Image (cartoon, rainbow, N blue to C red; front, side, top):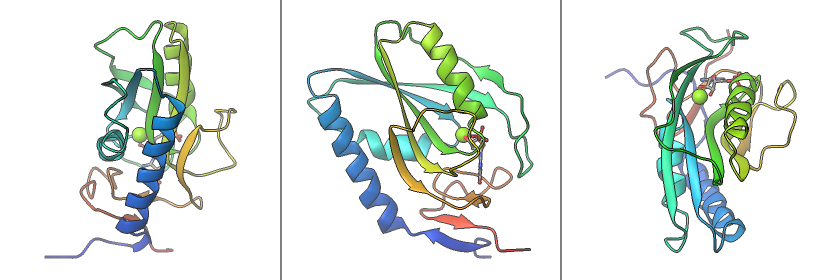
Length: 177
Ligand code: IMP
Ligand code: MG
């Protein structure tokens, strides 16, 4: 079998450790409250699955997903976002954490944030596994960030490279071309 392309940027054990820290922090920050996690499909699903299992069982949680597209198959971001799948639960009055795989231009996140804040969430925070800092249109600081990475195309751990390699346990980066 052919190995995955590119090189390892963040190995599996580092990702696991960081996600455990984020889960503990969320458990502290939301102690005595309930949390609704809203994952932005598809890339979030691995991160979200791991992070919720690091959140204290004393905290009641809900999980739902939205599907938004801004990327297509290319490795650059277009400026438009389409909602392909909406939430199945109401979020008014709830404490919501939006879960993203990666924030690059922040266009996806900004749209989702505005939509959810318009629906009357009591509080809205953002957890992202990865951030490519510096060119985000979402101008608030991210509340929970796994890793800040260089402006290169990455994949693995839920993130795809032309719909492939979401199953990798590490984050890889394409080789310089
Ligand atoms: P943004 O709107 O530019 O912040 O990014 C939106 C989405 O593009 C992310 O949620 C990812 O699904 C995807 N994306 C951005 N950068 C990368 C990357 O380096 N690899 C894979 N997907 C990416
Ligand atoms: Mg995404």
